[in-house]
Length: 119
Image (cartoon, rainbow, N blue to C red; front, side, top):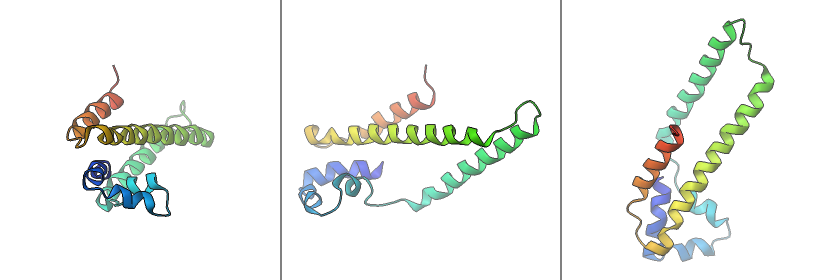
């Protein structure tokens, strides 16, 4: 999200022109200029929680986890991440028209809350 917020600063300062001239995919360059490695333990913890919960489900004789169930699960998690990425890029691209998009975090907060807990 910090990289998406930086997109409006690239436009405002004129540094987006330099990003457009580089011989790399511009969307990739703007989306991932920095990676926050401090968030890596959150991802590892999420994977550990999924593995532990799947292990607890497999102890119940009525709910046996099939390895083929893993394929659609990974597919849907990937689709969800791509949808959230596209929403983030769409929100960030509004700064082209509006200049400084200071309410980007507010929109992102409401969208992620709706995404987690739909009506």
